Length: 129
Image: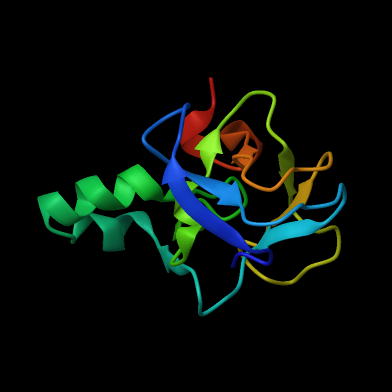
């Protein structure tokens, strides 16, 4: 779930992006996995989707390195674009009992109207090289 004010807009990175609607200070929690808000599906559930739905699902979902389940953000977090030098970092909280737990924090001050990016390789198994 997005925890800061954002807006979507045209990205210079790829298609639509997520942008800060106000300044975000370094260290601010920007997003966190919220059970019941994000959609979580295992591979069998995804395989039962129609071909068109699967294509769209894979475009926006990520495969959790922790649970090996797919997570689809139901808010505009699905518009985070990848950047190797992202301005947020996503980590699994040290002490959690929540499957798929993930939190994302600003790694530096982010200006209003600046695109918010993350490094998919930190949390998405489909991005492993």
